[in-house]
Image 1: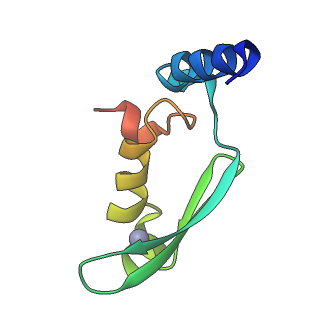
Image 2: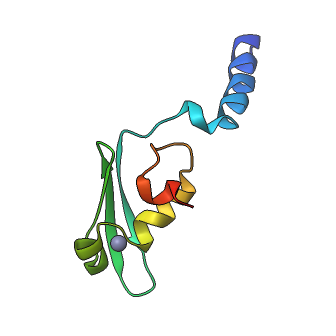
Length: 83
Ligand SMILES: [Zn+2]
C-alpha cells in the first residue's frame, strides 16, 4: 500500500471518532419493529414514520431510537434536548 493511502486511512479513523463532523441532511431506513416493519425518514430537520403512533404524536420509538444511534450527527430536536 502506498503512503498516500496509509495517510488517508489514518485520517478516516480520526474522522470516524469525531461524529460531530458529520451531519445527516436526509435519509430513509427500513426499521424492523417488534410488531411490523416501518419506514422512517429524515429530511430538512424533520422526522417521519409510517407507524400509527407517529401520526398522532409526531415522534415514536423508531425515530427516537435513530436519534440515539445518530447522536451528534443530526440537529438536536426539542424532545431529545429535554433529557
Ligand atoms: Zn414509528
